[in-house]
Length: 161
Image (tube, rainbow, N blue to C red; front, side):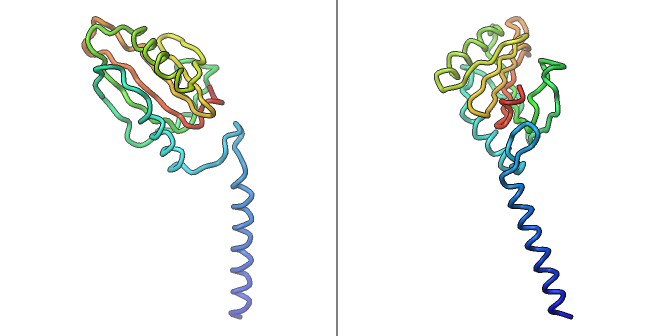
């Protein structure tokens, strides 16, 4: 009886290993390889740490856990990127205009190999490999002391935008 149970348990383990091997090389419907949330978020944070800070900006909000967005860019061009996204919000110095922020990120990100993919209503998007950075400066107003801009990162979002 013990031998039979051991044989069944062994067969189940081999089946699970076979299934895991199949999914290790698989990808989801968008072609993004299946990876765990922890690795996905770690990659987002690494990219976010490398994004330059607009001079004299002050951090207002750093999103704790990543949020998963299942938006469709075709429906709403201002929607957040689809996937696990990390976000930070900043207050720029008084008198800063929306275009000042967007021009700064163009000047800093393009030499680092990021490719601008468009600007719409104060939102600039940049891709490098499968990585995506979104700079949303639509909330920057030189006459508003509470104005802010956001930086969102999705390490596997470039094919979604």
